[in-house]
Length: 58
Image (tube, rainbow, N blue to C red; front, side):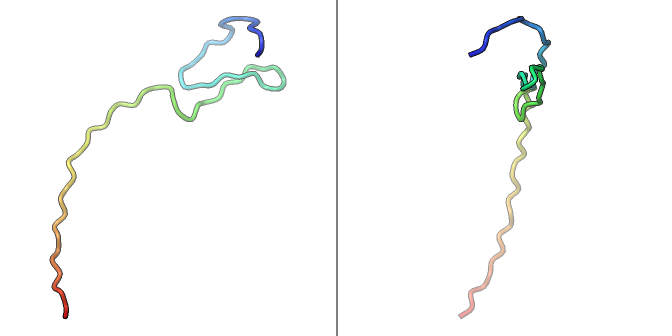
């Protein structure tokens, strides 16, 4: 594991991942998930489909 050299050197934003690249730069990448929580969606009542009666052929 590495050592912490400076604390709070970068202001972090929610939903971003921070890492040190091969050249030693601190990089910021958008996470695929995370960050802001989405508002809950209201569920609509499902419409009932009318069943079509088919006649049986003999």
